[in-house]
Image (cartoon, rainbow over all chains, first blue to last red; front, side):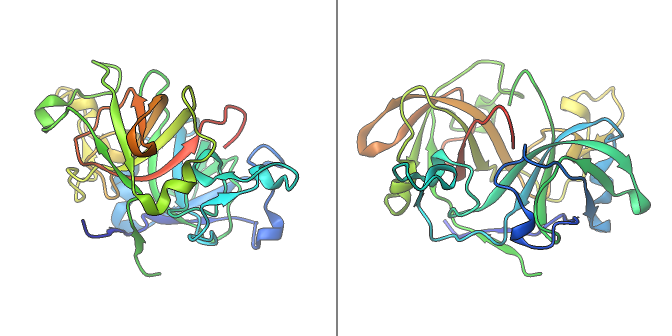
Length: 135
Length: 135
C-alpha cells in the first residue's frame, strides 16, 4: 500500500511557542487555544457549539518519528518501554489525541478550546465528537 | 505546509470483509480482530500485554474524503450536520478512533483486540494507551 497523505484541516493558535513552554502531560498547567479551520473545511464544523466536547487529532510535527522505545514519561530510572504503550510525541506517526471542550466560537467561526497544550502552528487533522457509549 | 505522509505501522485482520458486514457504531455487534504490526515497528509494542486498554488509530480507507456534511448517524429525517460533529468515516482525513482491550498476544507478537469493527485490511497508524486522567 502506498503511504497515506493527509492535508491538515487547520492549525492550532496557542501561546505555547516552543517545547519549553509545554508540560509533559495535559493535566499540568491548562491553557486554551484557538483551532483555525481552513475555509475549505469550515462547513464540517456545523453542529459544534459552545460546550461541545470534542476529540481533537493533531500532527505533533516536532516529534521524532524514528523513535520506537523510550523511558516511560521521561522517568530515566524506569526500564524502556515501546512508544505504543506511551503517549510520547516521539513515535512513527505522531498523531496527538486531545479531549477538549469548546469555550467560544471566535472570529471566522474558529473554535476556542480548553485545555490544549500543543505548540502554536500544530496541524489539526481531524475533529470528532466525544461519544461515551461507543467508538 | 506540505501534506503529511503517514506510513501504516500495520494492518487489521478481521472477519469483516465488506462494508455490509459493518454496523454503524462500535456498540452494535462486537467482534475481535488481529492487529498485525509490521516487523519494523514491533519494538514499539513493548509493555503492551493481555488486558492493556488501548486507543487504536486507523485509516478508514473506504471513507469518502470529499464529504463535509452528512445526516447524523444516517438518520435521513434529521438536518445535515458537519462531519466534525459526527463519527462518520466519510470525512477529509478519515482517521478511525477505537478504544480496545488486548485479549491475546498471538503469533509473531501481534495483538488480538476487542471490540474492533473495521474492514479487513484497514491500515493502523498509531496505538496509544488509555490514560484516564489526561490527554
